[in-house]
Length: 291
Image (cartoon, rainbow, N blue to C red; front, side, top):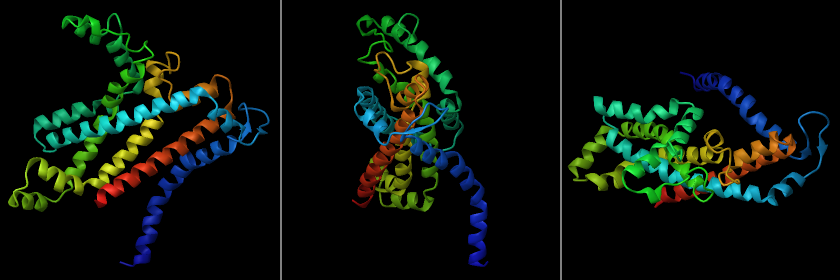
């Protein structure tokens, strides 16, 4: 088959998806970056103010609180979701009936609404009727009962379990697919060479699927830095901004005071921070793959 014809066919096949992506993702990002240099309330004339929105962001203590909380979410996502998903993938990558059922159960939160997940965990953490405090009381650990979502010191950490629970199913499916794409001949060769257990995992399996791990890290970073719905449902960024994230900070700054130019500056800042962390992660994981 003619190579030029194949390239033309591939381009024509990808063109609709690329067009949709550009229209609904790339163009809005550029549009947001443009309005970040303006004082604009969403209607009327936009007044050009240069970098004043970004200067205000840098001097706003709520921004730094939001960034710190997002970094906590990032660490929880990378060190919580990925290891749990990898361990489950190792245990469940075969395809018997029980493992298929467990995989489906772990994946269920991915098809649930974030509003539903937030409400479920609100009830779990409820100080009076929540199952967590009730369980601690039954175990004789009354001193461990806390106001999980009302205490500014622990509220951000209380959001970690629902965050992990919500997305671990996605990475489980990704890792299982990576496991199944490793040729069977390689597994047979490792058995002949006597590599089993942890040695096989770290010397053969993980290196073979390292590119998949890199993609999962990118998804974790981008997902954690744009987290919004779960936190907004459970705490709305409170108490006293203790669970404020960059996305909730952008939402509150934009729609509470109708400062669309300032909100655009925050969204552009989130994109830049995401690119920085993704670049660092790719540099670090690429170095790891070469070691």
